[in-house]
Image 1 (cartoon, rainbow, N blue to C red):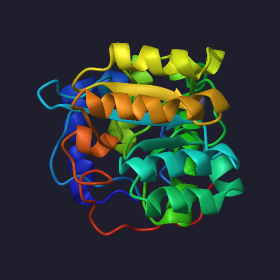
Image 2 (cartoon, rainbow, N blue to C red):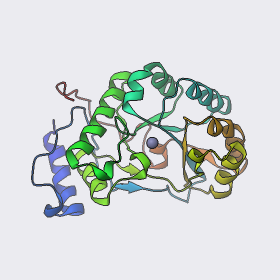
Image 3 (cartoon, rainbow, N blue to C red):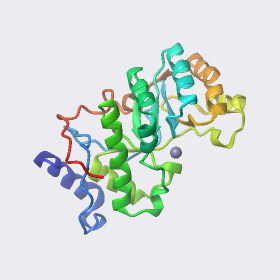
Image 4 (cartoon, rainbow, N blue to C red):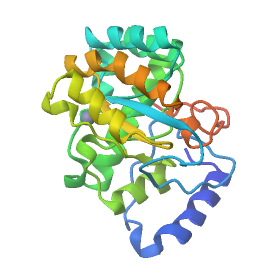
Length: 258
Ligand SMILES: [Zn+2]
């Protein structure tokens, strides 16, 4: 499912970034989904933060959709007219398709958080690509867009795997620069305080929409970020792209795969 220009792009990338030896000798899984097609080369193999030259930050929410908390979070975002990025787990998109659609309808971006949330650094290249592809496919089938960035579960991915995902699927691995450790349950006030203390232009803020304390923290957090003069933008905007990444060439749905 790779056309000629894409091949050229890949081989150029491989030569520039990896060297021939870094590419696995065996054939990797072909994408079961269209991958983002980029008309120009970009170099976002791994992203921890955006440019500090713009007064904007990206709020990112991992591990949803969640049947009870995602609607509350969306209400909070809508009331403040801000946009975020949701790194959704594929099998939860399958379980809660209406929530995935609402996320997109309200102007937010969906990123790829794999199909079932494994520790990628313990997996081989084929499994990594299968996880990414299966998530991409369900998101595409559900909302009509292909995620253009991925975030590894637990932040666990090797440098070589991130390069492989970039070369094979043209997807940056998006990490974060601000981590309130909300998954430890520190309470809403602590989540807000930690985020506001660390936020600065270009920050990518990690949090999880599956914890009630995180959702409870968001009104004060967002109001505080806005009061600091920061604009909240999706990851694509942070990377200088159009919404949902560089405009892809016409999407082509591959033969049914995984
Ligand atoms: Zn996660």
